[in-house]
Length: 419
Picture (cartoon, one colour):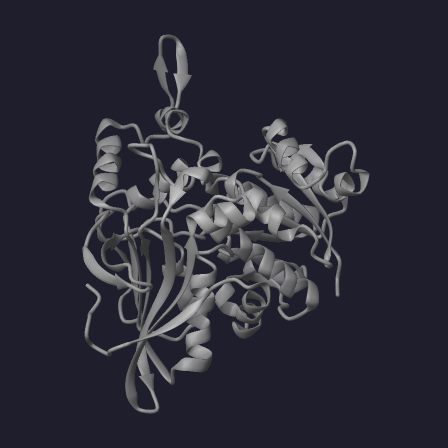
């Protein structure tokens, strides 16, 4: 088993979950907790038993300042600690810098969200512009030649949803026609009129960009945000919840490793949440371009972020269940088959048992599973790859070993058609 030294860039909601999940793993030699907010890094270090009175824990989880937008400083920090892997838990806008820093530093790289898209300038709701991951995937040969691995989209979704799609292709179907990721449940944050369950930057980016759809016969195309509402029936007694098209990485990732005809992503946002996002867009408050206010330049999206609750601080107020899963339609033994592979997280249980915000933990345990598979050699490879490029079963075996819930629901073929 290889012992890993990891530079964790970003110790917000998900970074905290990654660190707590990795604590005590036999393959972890060191995880550097690096953040622009050094006090936050030290706060998480203290949660891990890394205070001044615990020298061993401090050595395992040292806290460092880092500017995720400064490639040279990231490289210097990675080399000073001699890390094997840069784990990107920062906002997606820092993906290019951290991806390039890992290559320059000679380390492996992992993220949970790929480089951002740019809408088509003339026909954004029909034709894609710059695709998700376009900064990264073209460099596959370069990373492969260097013998280094960049594992992209290794969170919950993308991440486990891609693993589910690969597992279906490997073990449950002879032919797959369609892969549809559907996220929903009955999760809410008590006491707030508007409170995103993850970064407001990511929320705005995903929800207001033109959603992407992939068809083998047509390639990639886009549609309008929140389009094609569909009442998807979620398991575990939740029942039908309206889901809408949202831009997401699975649409880019899944076709790279799963032979199918169509891939979509829809999310259950709720009409009130959608109305707020639409209003932000109409007012220009989703913009990242600074405006001058009383002599001070400020990005409108930063103002929105400052006024919304910090997702890392609302775990105790989360209620309900979050279900993330992959609906696969195809054939087995000549007969039509439909299944929904999913993971369910109960907010109250997550906070009580782990001291973690539900969505943060649901995202954060996945890169730690991948680290374990890489450390043990169950997963190996080089180049720029997504989760669907690897054997799915060892991944699900680790979930079972760690007691992390996942399930498979058989569905009546043709009873409900995606829109």
